[in-house]
Image (tube, rainbow, N blue to C red):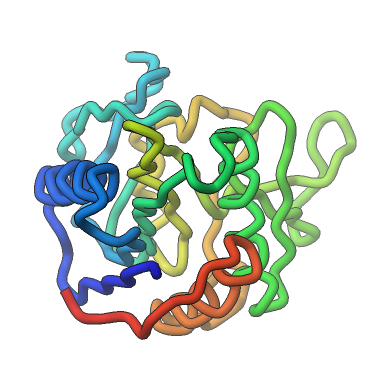
Amino acid sequence: MVDWITSDSRVDYHDAVAFMERRAADIAAGTASECVWLLEHPPLYTAGTSARPQDLTDPDRFPVYPTKRGGQYTYHGPGQRVIYVMLDVGKRGHDVRRFVQQLEAWVIAALAEFNVTGHIRDGRVGVWVVRDDKPLTATGARAEDKIAAIGIRLRKWISFHGISINVEPDLDHFSGIVPCGITEHGVTSLVDLGHPVTMHDLDVALRRSFDDIFGVSNPPPRPA
């Protein structure tokens, strides 16, 4: 069984990491169930293990937190659904690549409930949407914007960190970094795409599609 937690108030980043590390250790020890945590953070930037200093273009704008998850710089803030996944990858086949593919498929399935088509692109981490409403790129390709970021860490085959999906964040807040080190594409959100989706709407879609991707039954979420 997977324990679902939803936090209604914004969660401090250090507090979130401390919780994830404790929970991951307890899952590995067999004393706690797997966990999916849905939350929002106050505005902040995180630097993954591959972050490049030059990609932090406005270091004084928001707090910057070094983190041991994979990836580069990301933004978290109000209007963005952060999904921390503390799952046993060992009992799911000891296949990290497949696990990341499952996370990507989960995001794509949830977005599909709002008639948004997500895409995975080689060399570009995260989930992307094609922007038919924007001009073609210099190469004649259709423009694409990022709608979800993915970055995980494993300890004793237990995952933590996870996913962020843009529901209605202030997209200007992404301008203080080069998101995930990618300069030639933009960032979007469900509301920016014209879909008046609430955080609760997305949570329902995530819960509904989880079983199809991960094959685990879920109890109802409990408040934090």
